[in-house]
Length: 229
Image (tube, rainbow, N blue to C red; front, side, top):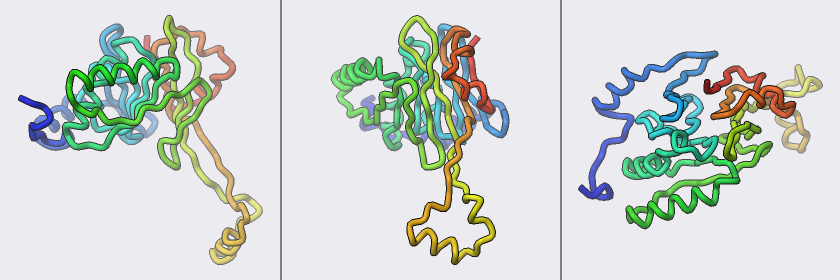
């Protein structure tokens, strides 16, 4: 059957998806629902539904399909093998093109991978591919950003720290009325300041060297740190 003409249900509905959810209840850690699986050399995909993202894609487990953001740590097959299926299946279900973040070092190869699959599959495989270097940041939404950090693996790799971003009122404006605050904003006065806090960090495959890397301090400060044994 031609996948492009087949009518399919959204993966978030139907009995099959309900059964899948029952199997993959995940865990509650520090206020976050965490799902997915990690089997060394076979498949890694860690999902944070409330953040609308997955770290690595493994073989593209069902629950990963509903995450709009995918952060890839490196190019080994057990971490990236399901990438074309992730994009193709979202397109099949009529979901919006996902945003995929990869190390800049492999971005060109990932683009070539999709070109090969487009040629074989005769499909568009729509997605937004972002190359991120260590230390660079990308806003997932106004109150959430991700920064790539250095990891130590046999091929180019990186981990990711997800930060919450909040605007707080400067102390000197405490006690002002709503109208006074509004007037200050209208006159161009900067009345707030930005705070960030590391919420979730994911290493992917790495040696323990990332722990002593002084540039990775926020990785160790995150509320949740996902590492592979």
